[in-house]
Image 1: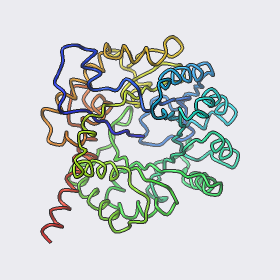
Image 2: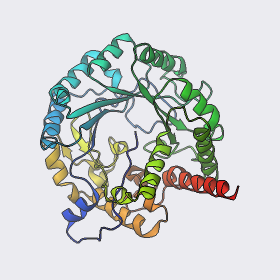
Image 3: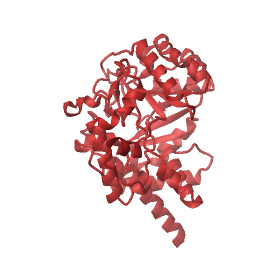
Image 4: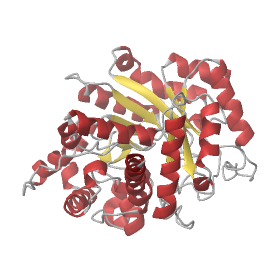
Length: 394
């Protein structure tokens, strides 16, 4: 799950730490990530979560505290806050516990102030899960990496492939008329076969496709990430696939680039530039809150106090966010954004990209270019520019 980080190139730096923070980061989050358990029933070889074998369970009091916080954040109106249930496998909690955690949000959902989404491996989804998800209006995202051969690294704790169980869950969603999106981790193997990957994903009946090119995050640091040349070729072929198949589901990354280009064309680009980064408060099962990147949750980092910004059992989210400018890693991230703005030719589109990638690759948030930047931001823009030049020359 990657939200589009944006901020304004026109804002001058300010010496006031709080004012500087608010010039980059919105004070009302668009989404709140809840991690009701770190446990996952799968053991994918590229997973970034260090605690995916630990069976934690979010107490009901934490969900209630988050619901009170969201009620405060939405009291003045505005669009609904998306509550994203994520990492490890949220459905591993079981239906009874998951329903209990959803219950505190029901009054807010009835008023249109929250909207639920869950990212799942789908292996546990059946008719009764579909009934629960439908009853609470939960939007479903399924993690699947393509056909059987490309999905081989998604295995359970005994090493058995999860592919058939994932398909069974997807079939249950389709049978119950529940729309779903898919997110695929693109490995070095699937990077060279995007058409086969996209054909397969589109045939599943999903409403949209997200493509996460494999990156270094958390404990996933051993595999080589794709280089820029291969990534440009990948996105060029994805662009061609999408152009030649207009009736297929939209690709998330192409949609984001298209939104930016439409704003440039229509003269509304300042809206892109003036939007601020989402702080993305992520609440762990304990109630601890980290900001800027869900991947930072449960990451040991003594120099940054494990990225803890507070705990919802002790402070509401609004109070935690009000003091966010005091956090060392947040301050470093703002410096990193300044560095990107002054030194990167792709900044106008990517707006500074992802906080977590900076830390996992460089050990600091002040760094600029990352493998994620090259593979997903720079390569996509370059592929689109190359395609345009070829079309013009023809």
